[in-house]
Image 1 (cartoon, helix red, strand yellow):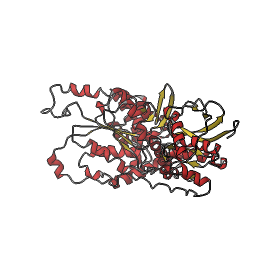
Image 2: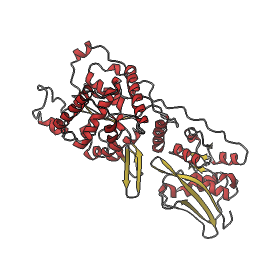
Image 3: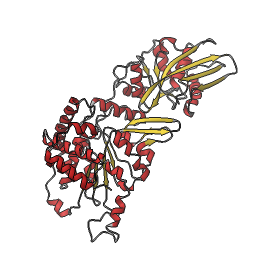
Image 4: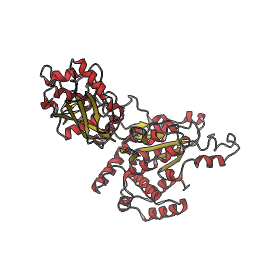
Length: 507
């Protein structure tokens, strides 16, 4: 590399699930020997100089005693992570003649280097491959990330296991084959069946409504009545992810480093964080503005068991994502947004001891203990939950006599038909949403056809329950979903009555 010559290749910086292009420039000039990385690098990026130096030494490549400056452009965008090791090494090797400058420098590269020259896996290979394909460049990534990157069929993928393998490829000694895409991750082999749930017919119906329309659901009942059991069976009646949903869900898990062997997600996520989870764990954040559970459950189910036991700040952080479908993380040095279109399913006891409905077992503070317990959940959060269902206790002797419930397959077929009706309706109306729960209130008002009796009942219910404008819209959405399940062209009085029956009075 001559004193006036600069070598450059490309990499990416992750902002949410977006991979933004980064130009990696390297210049060697006469002067006091040094190796510096500029362009707002974090600690991991700044330390890359030592990993690169050692990795090149393992190949027998000695960096000359010159002043080396690596610039990551644009300089005002923070750079995080060890995936800049590989593009920096490519620039230096091209400048020293180890790699041919053309086409080695016309690539997008990500990868962490080991001291022995191995290229180690990093997060975000799928978004990086998409960015490389859009820029019409090959992607160079670690061998372990190759199956994940190969999911983007339009991109040219090079997946060397080491710097030596990369050098041999560009020198024509041992060309690298294109990696094969990873097999889909279909989740657990055993899907929990709704047939296991005996009784609880009202809760089962609410679960079907939630699945058909994408509505949020709250189950309230004493311990051991099957609230968690019902929630865990919701994924089994939901339709499979569409290709667009699968790609977006997989990208979130790729950025979070949660993909198993790079396998694309095919089943809807089910996330059930413990009630001790912090606000950052639920909504996202932390030092690296990482996605939270509400984003990891995107296009799937977020189950919050023991809802009142979550901290108040953690629960309140979910209000905006539940309404907008996006989790916005604002920090002093970063503003990141992640998709967060989830179905919230929550479960809670009626009071702290859980026996409010049984006078012989309830504590001496009943019924005030139940009121205090429910007040731990704010009114605005409850207002965002469409279906509020009481799950009463059932004696074990009665359960033993009950027949097995309807299987998930039968319920899933009805849900699929209802979702097809919704998708056709909103596609015809020019709305991007696929389910009723995600359609804007103004569109719902213009589109939903209510019978006169249904509208009169809804007005009376709104006055009696003190429904907010949001509550009015959410009742309409649930009523429309009930009509879709019945195959009705018009929302009738029975559909509105059912939707209102699931609505909790204003707190």
